Length: 102
Image (cartoon, rainbow, N blue to C red; front, side):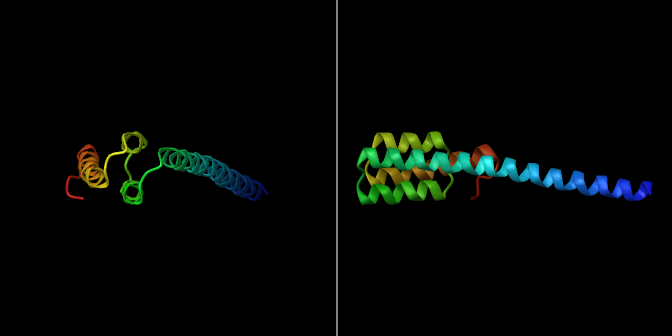
């Protein structure tokens, strides 16, 4: 009987742990979604050209930090300069991670 009780306790604690992990993951996914909404708002407010928007999308795909994206959007540089700055930021981020050969 004690073994059955221990088994039920194990099942309950495993279920609770999975449920808590789902709640935490939902919270962080909402936070990530909120960040992207702010980026969209900033881009819309700046009135960037289509070529600049392509570069902003590339920056997001290359996983630039929020701060790097904000600087890129706020300065409104020409698309060619944005591309070069994105490449520099990707290199810089790779050095911070210890992976310079991305």
